[in-house]
Amino acid sequence: MARNLEPQCRQCRREGLKLYLKGDRCYTDKCGITRKPTAPGQHGTSRRKVSEYGMQLREKQKVRRIYGVLEKQFGNYFNIAEKMKGITGENLLQLLERRLDNVVYRMGFANSRAQARQFVRHGHITINGKKVDIPSYITNVGETIGIRQRSAAEVEQFKALREGTGRAVVPWLQVDYDKLEGTLAALPSREDIDIEIQEQLIVEYYSR
Image 1 (tube, helix red, strand yellow):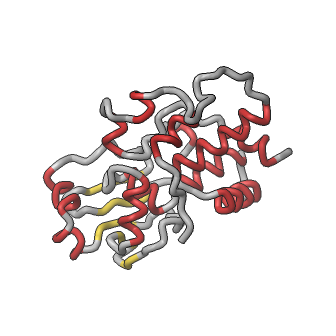
Image 2: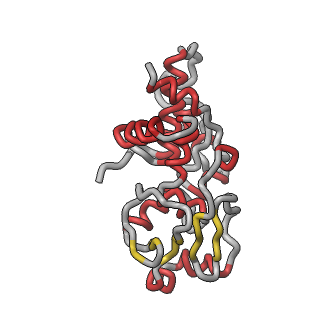
């Protein structure tokens, strides 16, 4: 399966802000963009005027990197969002938020989206009691996302979840840490997505 192998801290530095790709490490002084807040490469410290196209491109790249989606797949999500009712940009973000790997991360079962994607691929995650190992699976309202019984008993990180409270959960998810499962209570609205994104720039990029 294709995946982005570019160093994660380099991706944050390229976009000029924290994308929280390394989970807890991003909140410490070891964060790459905290230690070196310039763009990567020998011209990283130079200031250049960014064109309108450049701003649109950077916004698309930023969102792709946040959710860990490759170029072709991101384009497919945009095509689906464009055909849905409502505002295309918001539809796109909603689809990305409903990805199974993102939902696992949002529930606090993983420290980063990359780790959540790994948990899904390794068969630790279930939907309505059945194992699902496809990170790009689009979850639906009413579905219950949980951790397999065997995984919950053997994986230390899952054991620790029962003892703690997990991370703050977004309003459209309901999580029971004792049972290690959660439910998609509603579709995420634009107000629920706490990432600095100008989705209109992405729409303009694909509308060229």
